[in-house]
Image 1 (cartoon, helix red, strand yellow):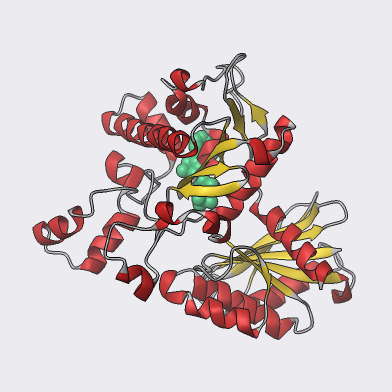
Image 2 (tube, rainbow, N blue to C red; image 1 turned 90 degrees about the horizontal axis):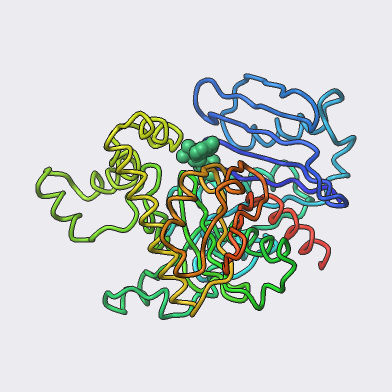
Length: 399
Ligand code: ADP
């Protein structure tokens, strides 16, 4: 069974074609600058060099058509006919409280996703455009939506209700939702598999550390708390996002700098975080290099970041009444031995200690816990696309 996985942004579209009999990736690619000058598609058939085509891509529908052409191409294609394509799975950011798991997409589901646009005004419209483009180009191919928020729908009320008038939850659905759910789901389940232990018996803290970062408490395979909130701005320090701050800073800065609410929103989303503290870059590699040269503010950014993550690990161990496994994933979590060691420093009292040598690993699965560490510490590269492909296969096979 062949399944196309699509992650559609406002001006870009990433895709992967899976052969689900072997769970292997046959081809992948990226359509960039949709609706802007310089649009292009980069397509890579597994085992071959990437093929780049610069062409006008005014909208997502043209983008999808180019993806299909690339997949059917005689040279770098991987399908001999569209009949081979069984289904398309989409990453969708926000499903509010409407879906706690992946679903087959139909008119009713689409209406529900449109209802969620106020909760994710930047992401959901782009995801919806991708789904509608596929419906137009491939009307008979079934489609599935896999939601970033779904895994966190198992959080108990006391973890998702904010301390503001309850009426805002009823009226506007203001609550903690959490994001990166597909990644937290994948790495927590994969961690249990790697350890050969049933996930139902494990208390796991998963640290998804990328440009956007979130920490999740996974108790018995279910998300019970997560660091992102109503939006992906909350939690630990990120590339350009501030993470947790005192909300009273917003009116203070607005008044002091004569900014309106929208400006402050941009400030906290785009100019803060690692970039804001370091004054240098949002990319952790630059910050690690600058800190190694002795640059004080970069050192401070690393310290603020690792201290914040460490506090969440402690908080989530308290929330679950213990911790058996700590998992690192995403760009920073998979690649930065420095951040992993800074985060784990001083957590020996909780049974967390890592092995220096084993921690010297990048981008592959590894158990980096020291011998005798009560808590297993794992690096697990995330694979959200595989989860989307698996859910899509399951849902279209059930029908
Ligand atoms: P996104 O959230 O956009 O998906 P990623 O998960 O790809 O982002 O993570 C991007 C982050 O990972 C960047 O800050 C980058 O600096 C960091 N990163 C990637 N490789 C390394 C590395 N070798 N060492 C340290 N940080 C790294």
